[in-house]
Amino acid sequence: QKEVEQDPGPLSVPEGAIVSLNCTYSNSAFQYFMWYRQYSRKGPELLMYTYSSGNKEDGRFTAQVDKSSKYISLFIRDSQPSDSATYLCAMGRTGANSKLTFGKGITLSVRP
Amino acid sequence: NAGVTQTPKFQVLKTGQSMTLQCAQDMNHNSMYWYRQDPGMGLRLIYYSASEGTTDKGEVPNGYNVSRLNKREFSLRLESAAPSQTSVYFCASSHPLKNTVTDTQYFGPGTRLTVL
Image (tube, each protein chain N blue to C red):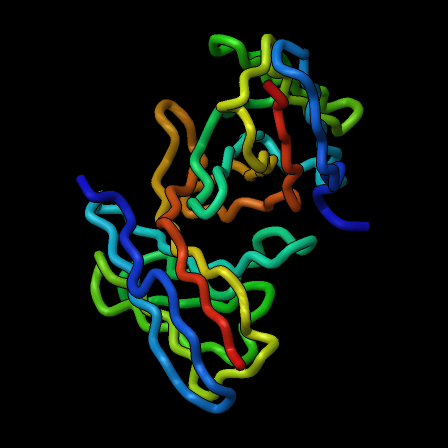
């Protein structure tokens, strides 16, 4: 079993829809959970991060972590065409110089 | 701040040729990484360097070598390119997230490499 599994997609939604992106993981040592956004032909950039279980909101984006189920989600409200990108989940352990483990990414397309 | 820069942006090689991908960061980060990204495979770590003077293998190191020239620069070398090395290569550097004890990574724009 891969350490991090992410739905492969692709996902296409109409503008204004609520989008739910999800990842599951198997390693209980992960404490930090991140979402990266990657526009076409660009490098990934950090979108949000959370520590341990709970929710974190930033504008139209909400990151949710359920450590008991080893499940994380990113919700996008009122999705816009500019949200069209590949979204990668990433997870890290506590400690300096700790490497991240990435999901494979899901490509989201928001139709005008 | 330019962040993480990579050169070249595009490259076409013939099988057996060699080349070096260059990466530099101006954020004074200790750790640097090289990834390759292929459709359906996600980001796979090739090599990383936790600090100047140290390098370690990642998930897919075969066919590659690296050099941490100084704190700013981390290069990736393909000694004898193969078509299986056709990919998009990303360099990243990392530093601790604010008020945390874990790192997050900052990525360069990538190098698109085709090996014929």
